[in-house]
Amino acid sequence: MAKVTVPSDLQAEQYQISPDYVRISMAAAIELGLKPGRINRCNCNCINLLQNYPEGCYANCTYCGLARERPGTPEENTFIRVAWPLYPTDLVAEKIAEREANGGVGRVCISQVQDHRAYDDLVDMIRRVKRPAPQVPMSALVSATTLNEERLHVIKEAGVDIIGVGLDAVTEELFEETRGKGTKGPHNWEYHWRIVRAARDIYGPMKVNCHIIVGLGETDRELVDMFFQLKEEQSQVIFSRSTPNLARSCRISLALPFIGCDAFNSSSI
Ligand code: SF4
Image (tube, rainbow, N blue to C red; front, side, top):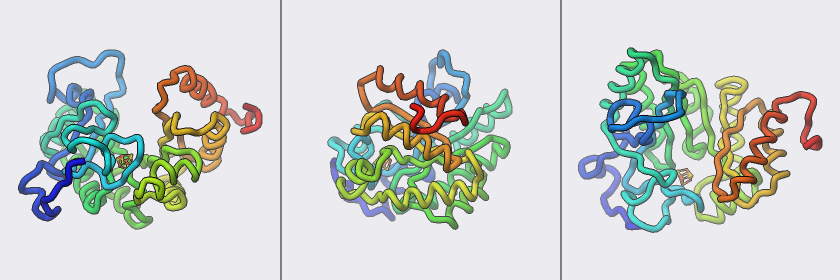
């Protein structure tokens, strides 16, 4: 990537960065009237926001468009390889409040990246949204590496009731290879689980979503075992696909209803 040479304490003068600015999914920008267009076949009314820093993300996950060593400049890269336009956070908060007053927003989710400013800025951004729209439900998709138990409490007090944690890989080996030591990235499997379990204790059962990616090199059995483990840990699974193999993704999603059924265990599938 193109190296950002401006020191971080001077970046706010030269770049539009968080907490004053936020990226917003194209669908959410349309929902809030910030972009022209119409969304078909989606009634969830969820607004997804993403922190923005010139370097993208300090972590180096092999599959991510924001990773530290990805090719290209930060402006050329996006979170999930689709456009996420940038707006002032206070404008987005105002639009959310307007929408909330006219029929409601389903939920607002703020995604953190790995950056030394990301925790303080997350709390600031939650408060900026809650101030004009106190009733709106809020989630935070956190970077576990930036957090500890005390910070999880502060995020809850600021107004978040659901925490998302990107585990992404379903085994320690794959995690280290795609997100941890193997990438010279900061993430650690054990620490991610510490945060998942602490969040489960602080936010309550099924209030923690663990994000899993299908297609990082795991087997179907490893995925299913993780789904059962998360059920035992009273956490939910959200999974996305990095494989072009649509049939495999469909097969895996067919297993999910069985995970919730008490008559089944890991060896039943
Ligand atoms: S921590 Fe998240 S945003 Fe950062 S590189 Fe990894 S997947 Fe991408």
